[in-house]
Amino acid sequence: MTLLLTGATGFVGMELLARLVSSPAPSAQPVVALIRAADDAHATRRLHATLLSVFGAVAPYAQRVTAVAGDLERPGLGVDPALADSVSEIVHGAASVSFELALERSRAINVEGTRRVLAFAARCRRLRRLTYVSTAYVAGRHRGVFGEDDYDLGQRFRNPYEQSKFEAEGLVRAAAAAGLPVTIARPSIVVGDRHSGWTASFNVLYWPLRALAKGAYPILPARRNAPVDVVSVDYVADAICALHRMAAAEGATFHLTASDQASNIGELLDLAVARFACRRPPLVSPSVYRRALHPLAIRLGPARRRRFLRATTTYLPYFAMHVRYDDARARAVLGAAIAPAPLHTYFDRLVDYALLARWGARPIGRAGATDALPLRHGGAAQLAGVGIRRPCRITAADGAPDQ
Image 1 (cartoon, rainbow, N blue to C red):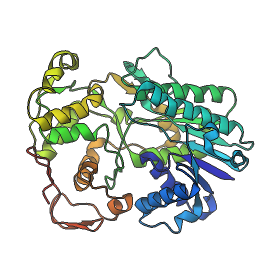
Image 2 (image 1 turned 120 degrees about the vertical axis):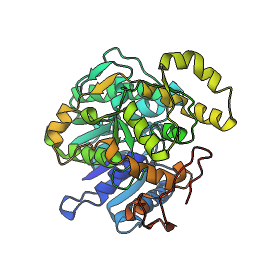
Image 3 (image 1 turned 45 degrees about the vertical axis):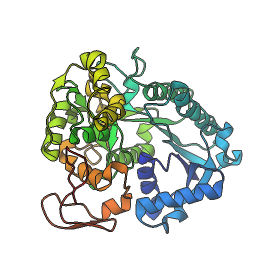
Image 4 (image 1 turned 60 degrees about the horizontal axis):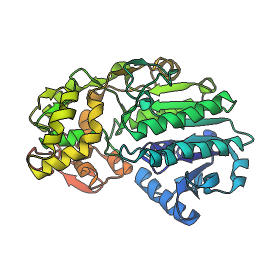
């Protein structure tokens, strides 16, 4: 029987794929990756490119996974209905994670796409489990503790991404109530691997960090004690794979969050200022900044600064959060073996990779990042064939890596 994985070419999906196709032979299971493509040949090319990035090689991993062309926006996912006869497990991780899409476009992918995955799952006669990758940000603007059993508390949302993922999770919860064997995983902000720093997605935390390094924030609209709930992609992938296999996880929701280990704006600023040797911007009330100061900031000052401020606007609401995620169920089930690490313990590795990859302008595959890490305190390293004699630095003046 086969596991169907959606989102295999995405950030978290790549980590899930890596674990699924490299598991030991006794637990090996055929994987079908649903990949948006014109046809199966195109899907296979995209899959092989992903395997090359993940492992540095296509063989022997390609023997464990088959690419199937499909699309969340097409009826029946655009696949042969007979595929349902061989699928016994589904991990649905495909989604649009853009904060800037219009709500209707976000719904078309995240809500209607999930509806089609659930319809496909209902046709799988021997379905053992469907694991849905939601987000902790279904909590929206909720204040206070948000539990793993909490869902609709009347919260409002910061952007179409949050709202569409909330609505999609509602479909999954309804399917679970109707008897579908479902597990829901809710990661918070997902950043790079805690060991190598590798990431395929320079969003959310990375844009504000880059702006800080450039000195682009004359002031920062944030509360010093506002939580910054960040988890590494390796923790999220390990947890999803473990939960997907656990009988005890069926019918339950799990917060894959830092929770009690979460950082805050003050600590994040301390880490950034120490690493980049940049100016510490003064903090101002987010509401005052949004109403009066931001409109001026994006019209005045150097053009480079204005561009950065516009690019980071969608992330500013996450600097003034009032929510704490209760992850008691996840901690009880996953135990100490699969647990989030505090951000400060791997922050420098995230930055090392971001600088080597020029914040995404020069992507370095997961395999290359894993082969060797840059050493911050002297020594030489090799990363994806690029020799460095000291860590890359970013200057507040122009942001150019110093190699």
